[in-house]
Image (cartoon, rainbow, N blue to C red; front, side, top):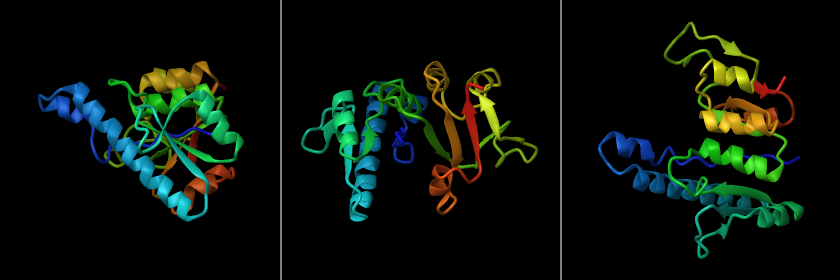
Length: 194
């Protein structure tokens, strides 16, 4: 099974935060891309300690640190059974790591995008702020866009819809939750075409 995910660096740095304080958005986004590379290297290190053959492919050329992303390189590593971690976003400012995940998923012909979040799926509002928020078990890509549900940016959801890639949204706080989701269990919202 092929899957795509994004190594978000938002916990370290967000370009939008720099722009909101009067800074340069492009520089802020570049710093955010570097943060995703830091996170990807940390994740790869953890996986290698578990004897999982892993490679980091970056959208930003950093040959001394990791390999550069290309579809050809990714397919080669996948053919060897390696876990591939995409880093550096799209390599362009103004695009989120969600967009990068959807782009890489489309390029690789991924079967799904797994989106780990702070809550166990997609809600009508932030359930941590609004106790009346309602959780969805299933939505279409179009419903996510029409309802303005802010689980991923619009470009990412639209790209997933255009390429018929399901999005599975789950909580990153459940111990063993990702494994449960991968095996068809767990609590999540599934976004598909139908």
